[in-house]
Amino acid sequence: QQQVKQSPQSLIVQKGGISIINCAYENTAFDYFPWYQQFPGKGPALLIAIRPDVSEKKEGRFTISFNKSAKQFSLHIMDSQPGDSATYFCAASKDTDKLIFGTGTRLQVFP
Amino acid sequence: KAGVTQTPRYLIKTRGQQVTLSCSPISGHRSVSWYQQTPGQGLQFLFEYFSETQRNKGNFPGRFSGRQFSNSRSEMNVSTLELGDSALYLCASSLYGANTEAFFGQGTRLTVV
Image 1 (cartoon, rainbow over the protein chains, first blue to last red):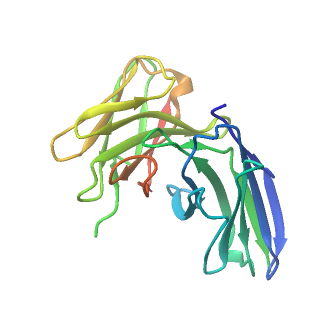
Image 2: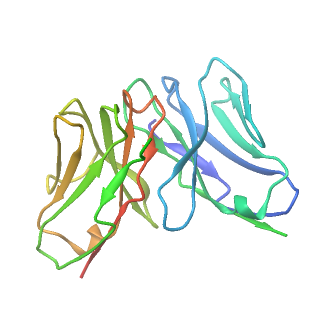
Image 3: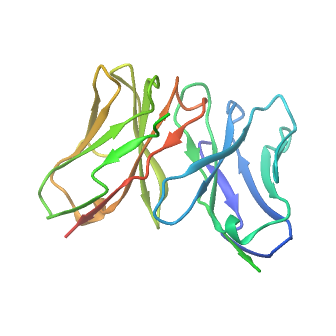
């Protein structure tokens, strides 16, 4: 019930393409869904986050799509760039409880 | 505005020793959470401190402990180190807790030999 399942484990995309990473959760009490980006040797950096009262949130080239009934949310990276190559983590939490992280997706964007 | 600062960045310790890691959160943030990151287990929650009190705890043995000071700085201690404790230890600060924006430090890379 506390798990967040993330897929795919790794993703290779050509420059200019769309990267899509998916996450699924079981606990319907989760009310906060952030995405983090992590480069090697660095801590995760908050990219974008959504709450269940909206179905989509867009910030620049990054979009979260949220499907409450399916208990799924996804990250879309439009016009992917080599600089986007990193590991991406989805996460979920309820109230002030801990963040539960997905297992991560290693994205490689080739020129 | 300064980010989250973790010290030291790297540590090498011997099995059986103990270690203390430090985290200075963003000014004004009252919540500090600690995570262990390993290639096999991903990001695992250790504990969270809010206004000097432990508010949440993960499923780690009692060898892992922490505390938070009145200035919100936090320390994490691991006693009787095991080889399996080798990991990147990350702290995250936020205003009120997990469902508000959490900002991570660069982590402390602990190697146990």
